[in-house]
Image (cartoon, rainbow, N blue to C red; front, side, top):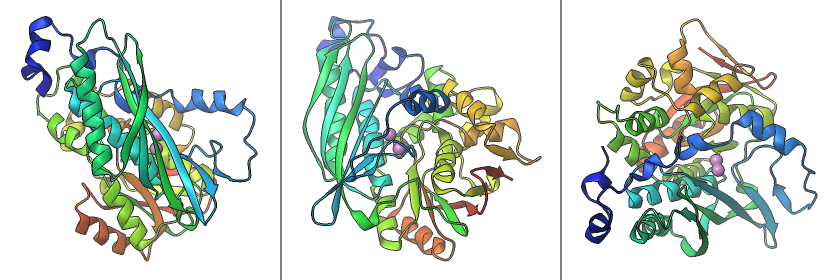
Length: 362
Ligand code: CO
Ligand code: CO
């Protein structure tokens, strides 16, 4: 199913444990689908005291992708942390995907990543140490590609493997794109197709008969740097990356923070073809169903949008693309800038309208 089963990280590792347990079987849900559901998380965080430092420009109040802290000279530090369980069996690919996903939160805020620290948990008694090395190697490769550096990290011996990064970025204070800031009249632009969660779940269950996983892996390991650069070139009012809460979940956060409503046209949303097929056959991660249930209070679906389409819009993406709100007049220029850079997709998927934080899908 995945490269690691036919080509383990090292010969000696395979010889030592002929029945090496595939990485992706250690956790019941993988990648961003293992996030704590938004509903539970909001309840937990709401009981915590609000941060009060005036230099904390972005804290957890609006469910933003990263914290932003003002430093002297008109700049700010963007700080984020993201880690999860293996979404593929190949350790190096897992490292690449997890690092790409962690770096994404800095790009969503229009920051430039500069420094990363690795966070890892690994079952040292069950799996060969070389495998952890490969995970870290894959992650470091992506950090280098992003123009940043790994400065160290922290690891623990633990029965379920986890990997990710805490990433520090820098951003000009005036250019921060957060959830807040979307305005009526804005267009919504998406830079990677949906369906990654559905396909990863199919692969995990050995049901990926359309062999869609390599394409999903390519997407998950594609940095959102080009999308960020295009935003820097054209401008944007708000942005977020589409990960565990799905397109609609992250859009809901944008609407709530910005005090606006949104409309999504399902026919304009790029979706991986195999994901459409699999979701019709009942394949979707638990996180996607949790998103769908949570979002029922926030989303109105038109009569042409069936349950399968709804699930795809709620699909928990691992390392998904950016969702960008910018004035409709500028949107074609952003699409052109994205296409010039070759982002996985560049699609206007809906718009922002006045109203309470709700989403209408037609
Ligand atoms: Co994010
Ligand atoms: Co994140």
